[in-house]
Image (tube, rainbow, N blue to C red; front, side, top):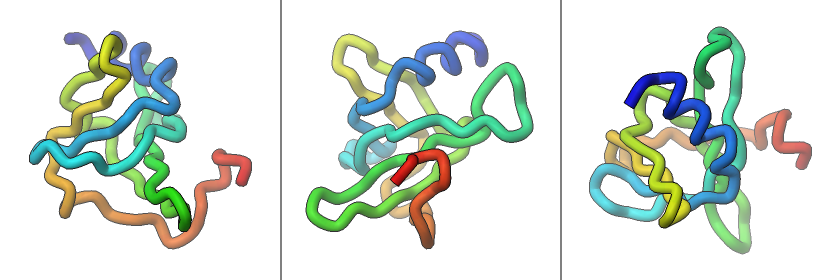
Length: 94
């Protein structure tokens, strides 16, 4: 799949479940962040936790594929390779 095709799928994937390469659920896609590239996002912001919301960011390059029928984003990195953010991202509006 071309970079622009994957980016287009991610734009419409807010709320999709996010899975690591080792099959673990790591949260839900909150939004994609564009900072340096026009043709694809720089990173994905993942919302984690139910009672206590936490956030994490993964680079666009870590996305293996988007499974639209399953409403899932699958990453190419393991769950322990996802680095949490220290504070909520500005774009989340929260």
